[in-house]
Amino acid sequence: MRSLAQEHFSGISTSQRGGLLNASMNPAELSNLQSKYEISVFSASFNLSSNRLGFDDLVGGDNIEDKLFEGNKDVDLRFDGEIYGPGFAMKIDKWAFSVQTKAYAKINFADVDPTIGDAVTNSAVSALLGSTTIQNNNNQRANGTAWGEVGFGISRILFENDEHKFSAGVNLKLLFPGSYANLGADKFQGTINNNLGDVTLTNASANLNIGYSGKLAGDFTDFDNYASSIFGKLNGFATDIGVNYQWKDRLDDDNESYKLNVGLAVRNIGSMTFKDANNQSTNYILNVPDGEFLDLNQFQDVSSLEDIEQLLLASGYLNSVATKRDFKTKLPTVFSAYADVKVIPNFFVTVYGQQKLNEDDANDQITTQNVISVTPRYTAKKFEVYSPLASNEISGFTAGLGFGVGGFFIGSSSILTALGNGDQADIYLGLRLGLQ
Image (cartoon, rainbow, N blue to C red):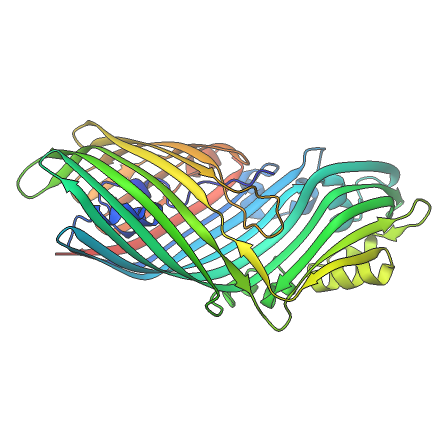
């Protein structure tokens, strides 16, 4: 399974300015605060990408289902949002500390066979008569997750002289799971018949997982259900750890820069447990014998996992294997590495890479991304402009643009390729204040 967008806050999170955004990528970056105190007022990043749709389709939203399930290529579509609430960081001698609030919302369709998607969402109107046999060994998933987080960071300078500085840091995170929904169909095989819009499934088998908690048991594509249930009760913990090295480049007595800034980090080591009155995660075996037929028309326009589950159970073709009332989901653990190099005065180039450490196809795994990017950046004392260039597994090549003035920043990692109808739409912005 592939599930990739771009890294959030691409370009600004490796800015020479340092701060809480940099520390979200590597907690050791807290030691590089350029002011004694920093206040994060608000930051947000939203990304929508697909391997089948262009920018106009993603933003316009007309006939998305028809276009999404055209052709024979498995469908990947992802919405990913991060919102940073109030945060605070401070330096005391060789130590630095922070507290940061965050909220996350993710919707992911991964490795979905287009014939199944077309049959369920559109009653396969594009093929008025025909039969298609499918054998897909992937775990096809429709997944949604919303949760909140409060993180406490600490970093220390381990060694420092006039030329070099080494730092290490850790971020301890309290997790507040809100809502969850997962529909997984592993090792699906079967035959879809379409007789003038009467769509049925026969000679079919699959291992299904249907899990939900909170409001996403209802419509898991409705963003209001994410926004209204992000922060649940404390029920999970996670950790980020990182190290940082700087080769210094002193410009004058009042301003310190670097020739090279390098960091390594492992983030999101942990999990959270969902508990709610309607909590349920059940593994099923789907078995539709040859010569018997499951009506697929009944699932058209159904977006509630509870309704899907009840329709399948009523058909008699679904057998329960195991049920859990409370279930644990793993955070998307990643390893990241980056190097920010000063090429000439005021001009830097950042190379960033991120590798997921868990596979995305497990039903209890929140999906994440592999990514590599290169970001040239011009930096003045109060202004910077940059252009992140990335290679993405879902949306392919993306090129963006962003700038920061004082503590305000705004940007997109795909705005330039979007002008050519690229396969990604994203934007981020924020405001932070540095205080001496």
